[in-house]
Amino acid sequence: MSASPSTTLAHQPSPTRGLLNGVLFVSLLAAAVTRLAALPAIAGLGLSPLIVGIVAGAVYGNVLRDGMPESWAAGVNFCARKLLRIAVAFFGLRVSLQEIAQVGLPGLVESAAIVVSTLLIGTWAGMKLMKLDRDTAMLTAAGGAICGAAAVLAFESTLQSKPHKSAMAVGSVVLFGTLSMFLYPVLYRAGWLHLDTLGAGLYFGGTIHEVAQVVGAASNVSPEATHIATIVKMTRVMLLVPVLLVLGVWLNRRQAHGHGHGHSNGAAHAARGARKIAVPWFALGFLAFVIVNSLHMLPEAATQTVNTLDTFALTMAMTALGIETRISQVRQAGPRALTTGLVVYAWLIGGGLAITWAVERLFA
Image (cartoon, rainbow, N blue to C red; front, side):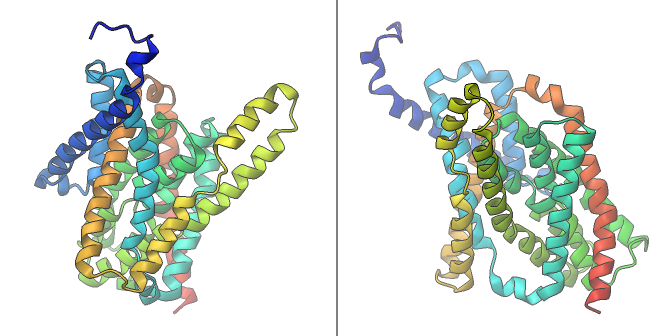
């Protein structure tokens, strides 16, 4: 133990071991998180293992961090970056084109309108009103616009942003998504939404953050509404692919134009450009798995097994992000990021309802 780390010989075999130890550590923590998330009290709140994972990771990372050997950080980083991309790609197996076709054009129009408007409004509110940096604003908007924590993770991969920014975005997903599960059914029962079953399905699926939260809220209305809401939600998940591809192209453009600004920045920009050609390949992987699922290439049992493993991989990625998150960094932008999340949420409730009414009239 006392061998000095500066001796390269002692260090030679350790990177792989450190990486594997880090991955193993994260997987054990994620296994504990999965058991924890299955407890009725937590499952009843619609909190997915992903969300419990980032909280558990953040607690560990900020309270017990010193207990983890330095060399394990590589494994934690691997889970938060590489494993994350693979897991987001496999998320495509949860979506099928047949299901999306069931809700048809109304579901697609509803989803597209909400995703685009929420991303634009959320990013604008974050940057202009709350003076947040671009990445934090975009991640917060993405969590509300598309599919909660999974969208934050996918955006984080494409933007190459810092872990604490994702943690803040996930924080607003947890807070406002959980609130939706209780608020939406109350508004519906009170007759304030003026929606029929199709409308309720479109609205719940189109505007609630996480898949689990959509199911939790819509199950208070009716099984039909839950079915429609889940499909609309999955249509939103599908839109992750085109959104990420557009984001990638936009980032590449920004990168290319960045080269012109002064020579001092040139090398830094070149290094950044080399590190990420911002085409999110995992988004194309996601699309490939949607097609695999739509063509029923895998037996039902295999798909379910892969989905279970995928949820676990996403939980590992979230736990790793939590471990890398520093509370001090969150504190700096915390209130502003949360206020941005609130603006996004207000838009989802009010603007989302207006969009749902418009879509219902359009296809009546």
